[in-house]
Image (cartoon, rainbow, N blue to C red; front, side, top):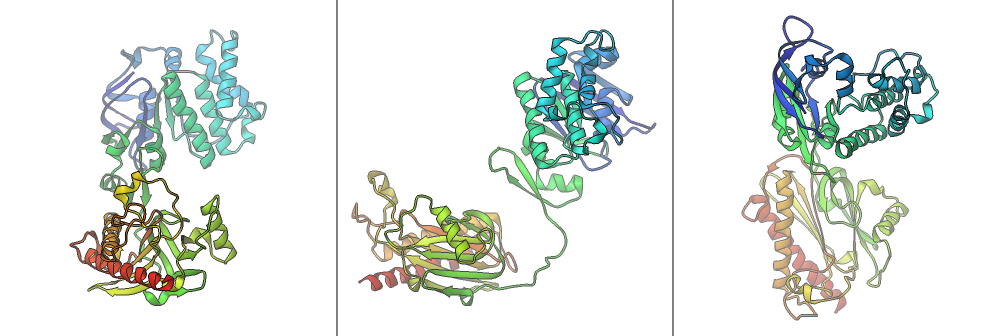
Amino acid sequence: MLHIHQLSGGYLEVPVVKDVSFEVQKGEMLGILGPNGSGKSTLLKVISGILPARTGSITLNGAAIETFSTKELARQMAVLPQLHAHAFTHSVRETVSLGRYPHQTGWFSSWSAEDEAAVVEAMKLTDVLKYEHTSLDQLSGGEQQRVFVAQASAQQAPLLLLDEPTNHLDIAHQTQLLDTIKKQCIEKGMTIISVFHDINLASLYCDRLLLMENGSIKHLGEPHVVIKDQQIENVYKARVSTHPHPEQPKPQITLMPNVQKLQTDFWVNKSNFRIEDEYVLLQSAHPLKTVSSAVVNAGSGWYRTFINRCVPPTYDHENIAADMFSYLQTHGFIPTDTVGMMTAISPSNVEIADYPMEFGSITIAVTAGVGNAIDVSKSFEQDRQAPVGTINTWIIINGNLSEEAFIQAMITATEAKTKALYEQQILDPFTGTLATGTPTDSLLVAATQQGQSYPYAGPVTELGKVIGRGVFECTVKAIQKTQSSTA
């Protein structure tokens, strides 16, 4: 579709864009990234012919771009520059209709049903049809941006060049606009080249990314190839952390500030726990980084309040999460700041213990109901409900854990719990074999993220050894407490 070979050019004798080469295929969406002054917009202007190329070549569908007349090129390539500083006074319809100029034989003298349909469709796609007869200068910056995108869309060129198309748009209209653009790539085979400031948006919508630095290509490839912590930091001089998008196989970045932590050092131990008639409660002075399989706020996050709520053995609710959410609100807890679990075991049977380490400490809390214990290796043979009861395990760490350490801590804790069940000879009542847990076990690992760093938490590491010992001992004691109270 478009072939760029050793392209240099820009405003002055010294080129801004230097020896750039890449190709874009039909139906592909390419995002151009880079810090301010890296040459993103200049590259787009040179490709479109707005600025002259000093050296190199631009080939469109096999033909050199300089061989096209102005009108022929406009039928092949639509360009959306950055938002105009001062909008003119044409109506929205008139502005969008200008996109049909390359298809006219005279100044609107040959307006056709095809032209009309293209303009209306473009206004609908960008949600500006309701402003059809409104003067452009009466719209907000974001609304004006959508009008100019509609103008480029109405041009119906197979190649669309966009310079920061989401500038001035709120998140809803950013999504709507990029969804529309991406849909045209997929359904109509349109080729898109777009400059982005927002790395996450570019990653989410583009097939490939071109990362520029000082007028040259630094990295080119699929988002997962380009968006890497060190590569982004080297180019942007900003510390970031990459993570996967929750729905798409695309990387996203989080900015990592360089300012010192504002909060004072803090410590969590057994004294921070409170045992009430209805729950076991832990409240921390500051948020803890948390990974859990809780009823409310499962997954990862930062939370200050942790509740293990006791419910009757006959508890049955159509929407357990909604019921727990309501319970937290009723009892004065902030649901967005609280991890909530459930158990049928009395809070008085919880086992809580502190375990010191050389450079920190761990607090373990376990409630263990094993009347519905299950052998996971035999569960496929069974067809039974999962009543409440559960073994709920909390591991609170005064230390700084890596992402890998959080996962390893959960594995180590699960292995230690299983060993405790073996030690207590807990059997699956349906199979008579040794149980490995219950159908509704929950696990939580939370860390202060201060002090000693722990990159790993496997069973041979300092952290893993303490987790293994602590979870095993607390689970055994919690089982014994529960069995004694029900004997």
